[in-house]
Image (cartoon, rainbow, N blue to C red; front, side):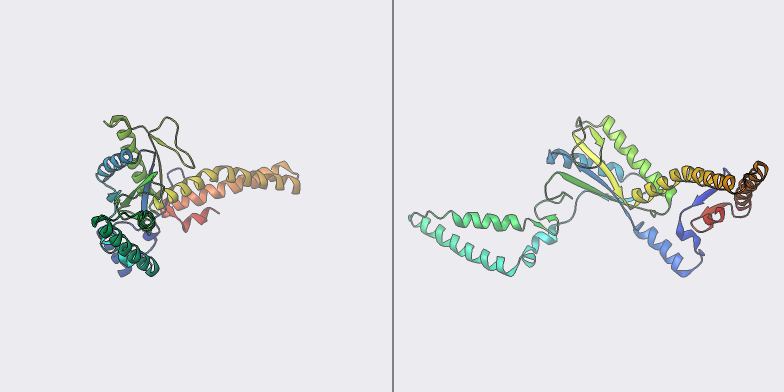
Length: 286
């Protein structure tokens, strides 16, 4: 029974010769899995974070399980077509302010003094308003937040999050890359993992890992850790109930022995016939 494992890959529950399954397998080979893994780097020194993000991204790309990794986004289309994202009212206001600015500059060229400073301030407000469109900075290609304190590395893997063995290997390799970089980088970077508000103490950059792969694996780990105390509580509850109901030691011992043996036989039979459990056959033990 100790050799009995659980296969969490739900795709393998379906007959592998079905056209839909074959098409899905081809899609995974071409485009990778359907989930992402995110590494969030937080700090106060933006240029420093950008260099570290580039270094880590280059090393993460070498991981066999990774199809692609990036800390940047292409904003050229957004920058070239920014006018399409500006409200009509703001376009009219920008046109009015620009005409006013042109008249002011013309007067200054002709030697006429102009005390107009409001136009520049209003134009700066409009530029600031549309510097960030749809959570993307028009003048910054990095995946950086509005507060400019966090850069995101987006990783697309070759497998799927429900394949827990794959997720475990992916998370292990990514953590190993970060650990090795933390030990041997030439930038004097001290990376520390921390979740929640605030930065990690004595760290130049605080990082955290999230995404479908980590969430799915963490959920599975928590469920496994909860099985033992749950089983103990259930076994103790049955024992207490039998003591209160029967009050005959021999009958209680016999019933509890039969209960334990039935569980062992069920999983032993499953090991010999099926070889492993999945999310459906795991209910056999109940």
